Structure formats: structure tokens, C-alpha cells
Length: 65
Length: 232
Length: 252
Image (cartoon, rainbow over all chains, first blue to last red; front, side, top):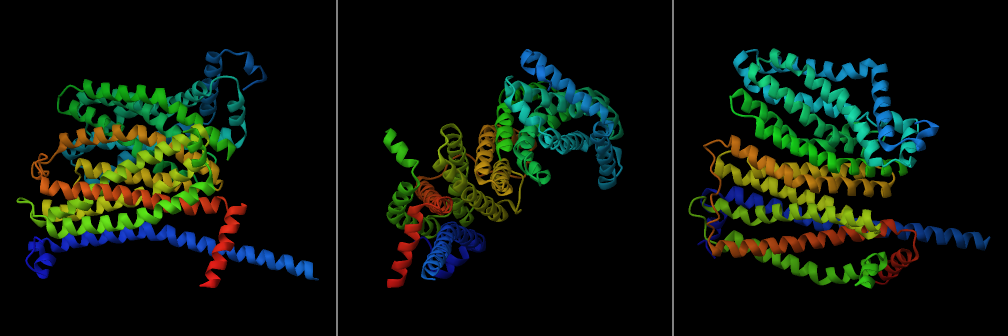
């Protein structure tokens, strides 16, 4: 490791704020880019499940009466 | 677009299309006047915003004049295909035997004559109002003549892609403005060079090159865009 | 070759294969990113002129490189869908736009943050920054155009045309912005200078560029999978998938 201590790594001779915020924003955007489609996929499958189950129920109700 | 359209040669067909667009425009003089009026009004805004000092104004004048020309071109390009889309003429054009590339070029040519050419011709008046040095005025006219052609071609791509949409007005500027930037850069650079007494020829040549490229390629994109919009 | 091409056009096959690729590519990408970030952040020596702020290069440059490449991937996918009417190319094109916009945004934002300690200003009308801004506009234009159409098939065709137009224009825009900057370059601003980067700084940079490409691929496949499911919602295989997921969910 280049830095001697954690505080030196955080401070980075005055540039720490810039460097760390840039890295954090990047990590946040990367996470968003990966997580958002995954969540959309889950939500879509759940929604489709609901629709399909409702259709099945309607069908069995109709045949039962 | 008469019933005898199929008997016309392509050149005649395009000439008629061009004449039709021009006649339509002349019948509604307001449509021709609006871009120029817009140009005049925005020219009046700049001294109000930047201060009336003549030296300062003439420094900004090349860029200001070019940006206004660009904006008035943008605002009018939205309407190029709108009327013909609404009344179904555009569909007739798409199924006509003449190549769409050339008929689209006729539309774009008409648009350029109504906005670009006219703006270029009246621009010396506004250039004088903004204290642009006399030696730069001819370069301004020349750069506008070449540059607005490219702007019309690019603007019609946006118009063709958005003509089927109800809320196309704002969208077209989002699509097209980034593509306008090279023209703006070299157009205003040509005028600035003339202000400083440098040769403006190279810039005009680059503008001409852009125009050639746009004439060669843009009508294909416009034609594709029209087909998509009609199908949608 | 052609059978592969045909398979590529089949939604269920693409859904399945992307799932099995992602199963190993996604962890590898995340590890590579983590390694690259720590490497750049903690284990490289600072630049002798810019100090520690130069560490931003390890995210700024990869994001910019991949954002630009993403536009070309999008435009090529658009061309494939226009020419061969391949629906899955359409899906790929649509998946690129939001990711590319996100990467461009990262490049711009990190560039601004880098600019503050280096140039003393958050925003400088530097040629490369301006070009990236234009690239962001181009991406957002594609997204906006897609959203404006109600008919999604027409939307993707229109976006394909627009991205092709953009692809032709990008080199012209870049060259003109470059030239414009060289004309107006203020004397007070010095760029990082020639490419005299030490190789110890170069290796993590290449590492990060490779990981960002992998990240782009992962994000693109994830987006494509959602899009495939949405487009194929009425087909049997998607219904079976949804119901299969339901039974698995019930068991656990």
C-alpha cells in the first residue's frame, strides 16, 4: 500500500475529498446500473405471475360453476 | 402530386415538388416572415442582455448571429413534413415511383430556400445592427448560405423522425442540436476570421465539405425516418 | 456460423445463454472492479505534478472510453436491426442507451471533480469535456426519442436511424470541438501533457478499462434480459418461466 495509515489514505494530502467522492459516485452508479435491471426483471416476473395466477383462477372458477 | 405523377421524369417530379412547397409557403407569407421576425427579435435581445457597448457587441456578433440563425432554422424545421403528414400527402410520396432520396431533397431544398437563403440575404442588416465590421459581412452571408444548407438537411432528419409524434416540438431540438455544433463552430469561426482580417476561405471550404457530406447522406436518413413515422 | 446467427435471433436461447454467461461474468467483473479500484486508489504512487488527485484517472478514462465505445455498439446494433430486421439487435440497441448515458455521466462528473484540484474550476470548456457533454446529449436524445413513441417497434427503428446519424457525426463533432478548443485554448490551462505516464500507472488503467468493458457487457445483458421478457410476455416460454419461478419461490 502506498499510504502509511488510514487517515493518510483518507486525506490524500488534501485531495482526499475529491478522489474519494469521485470513487464513491462511480461505485454508486455502477451499482445502480447493475441493480436496476435486476430489480426490474424481478418486478416484471412477479407481476406476470400475478396475472397468470389470476387467469388460472378465473378459468377454474368459470369451469366450476 | 397529381394522377399523372408516374408519367413524369424524376427531375420534373422533384421540380414540381419544390415548386409546390414554395407556392404553399408563399400563400402563407406569415410562415416565411416568422423566422426573420424571430431573428430580428433575438438580435434585439442581445444588446439588452449584454449591454449596448459597440465594441463588445461586435466581438460577440459572429457567434450571436450564427446561434440565432441556427435556432430559427431549428424552429422551422419541425413543420417541414407536418402538414403533408396530417393530410396524407406524405404516404402518397412514399408510394410514388420516384426515388424518395430525391423527393426528400426537394422538400429540404424548399425549406432551405424559405429559411436559410432568406436569412442569409437579410443577415447583413442585422450584422450592421450588431456593429459587425464591413469586411466580415460578405463572409457572414457566404457562411450562412453554406451552413444553413447543412442545418436544413440535419433538421429534416429530426423532423422526419418526430413527425408522427404528438409532442415532437421540444424533442426535435434535443435530437438535432448536438448535430448542429460542428456547423456552428466553423460558421462562427469563418466570420471571426474575417473580423480579424484573416482569410475565411478554409472555414468556408470546410462548411462546403460538410454540406456535401450532408447532401450525400442525410436524405437517406430522412427517407428512413419518414418510412418509420408513416408505419408507426 | 449462420446457425449461430439464427440462434442469436431467438429470444429464449439468448435469455438462457445470457443467464449462464452472467453467472460467471458478473462475479468476475465485480472482483476485477474491486481489485482495480483498490489498486488505483491505494497502491499506486501519486503523480509528481498532480499529486493524489490524478487517481481519478482510473475511473474517469475507463468510463469515457467505454461510453464512447457504447455509442458505437448501439449504432452497430441499430444497423443490424435495420438491415436484417433482427429483433434481438433491437433489444441490444435499446439496452445500450441508458448504460452509455450513465457511463458518460460518470466520466463528466469525475472529470469535473478532477478539474477542481487540478485546474481550480469545476467545469472547464476543454475539448474532451465538451465532446463528452455532446455525447451525453446524443445518448439522452436516443432515450428521449424512444420514450416519445407509443409504438415500441417504430421507436426502436427510429432510434436505430438516430444512432446511425450520430455515429457518422461523432467523429465530425469530435474533430471540430478539438479544433475549436485549439483555437480558443486559454493559456492558463495546461492539460496533463504528453502521454508520459509511467507504466506502473498504466497497468491499473488498462485493468480498469478492461473491467469497465466487462461491466458494460454485464449491464447490457441484464438490460436485454428484462427487455426480452417484456417483449415476449405473451409467449409460452416466458409464462413457464414465471410460473416455474413461482413454484421455486413457494418451495423455499
